[in-house]
Image 1 (tube, one colour):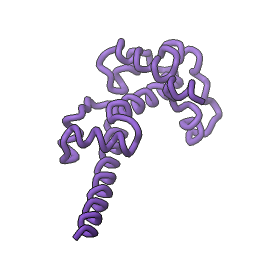
Image 2: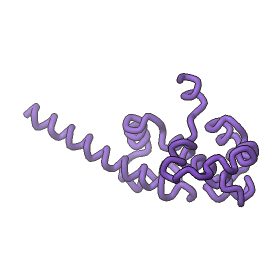
Image 3: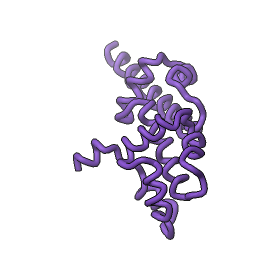
Length: 147
């Protein structure tokens, strides 16, 4: 009887991992849309608390933090391209406030978006896109100091 219980727990954990992966995939696809934890939890047929706990357990950060990182990664790409203003990039990646965008960008990247745009507009020139994404991925300032 105990073995059946352990088997069920393992099956539930694997199911939760698959569901959380789908939530992460949805965030990756829909990062520019208004996403909130309640909508993500409803789509996953989980409570908000369970989704948050499982997402953090599996990916090491909250769903909100993951969403912000995806938005900032996309913003970095658009700012390097140089054909959109910082305000246009802000709204293009799903932020509704320029102040929030600038604050979050500066927290993750270490410089304000206007400075990044000015200084990095040609940073990835000549680098294949598969490598460019790796090299230009934002690193949280706390992680950068730990290295």
